[in-house]
Image 1: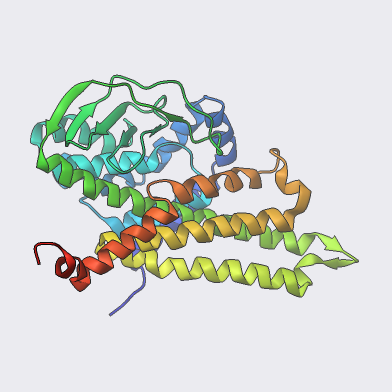
Image 2: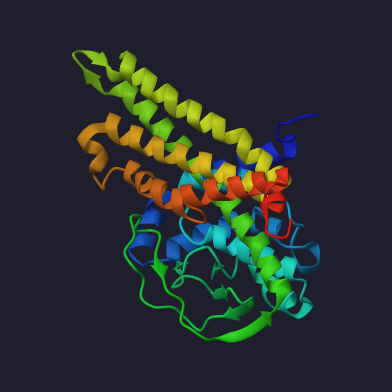
Length: 339
């Protein structure tokens, strides 16, 4: 068996990397954090033209079918570039509507989501009460623990966040009831797994960007007439960061291949922790200059921890991995009162 991306998947990732590398993403991120969505929306349009969002919708509604491997490869590049906005939430909303199987809702929402023309954000049971970038989204979906899918009428004012470009708000109550019942609950679980997987991919890309920038800086900054990258302690710190990221990579691909909730949680846990460790390494080795907002590095530093905790904090992911292991072993059934 071949456990490597196909040539087509690699080409898709390279296309996205080249597109984002030719765009002024840091300027779009800073504008997004200030409430100006125009540069970010223009960036979204270029990303959508590659077909990225269409990978989360079925072919009957302008999509390409659900393709988690290709989607994961693309979201690694979005994380590497630091793309702002509810990219994960838009994809998760498309998965939710595709899995739901309601033809009327699919025709109403999916073409716009697949084309990247109508960004969406959403809240799901277990995913936290806040919606990301509700002020920039065309649609705000909410799913209640009772299995009600609603189109929220709006959201409250954005709250402050560690990352200024992640604008969080509480959805307003009520809104149009789109669907309800067990089918919504099942579709929401699938959407949450996709959101966790794609956030893990963003974490990996963010960690790689932080490491690359730190390695480059370690080659330039000198102490005692020598580049700090030549010091053994610095080499060890960078090597540990690289190992953590490389350890997360196969777990991410395995999760994208299987979409098993336990494997998705394991990938999110390792990628999130690796990205956060990369941020700590970058901050330490850059020294005081790493704290300055003017340095583009700060854009990735501020993303690492929120992404680590979004759609599954480390403790939540550990619990999910344990739960799936117990379920797979039959331990939960053997120890239940009915057994």
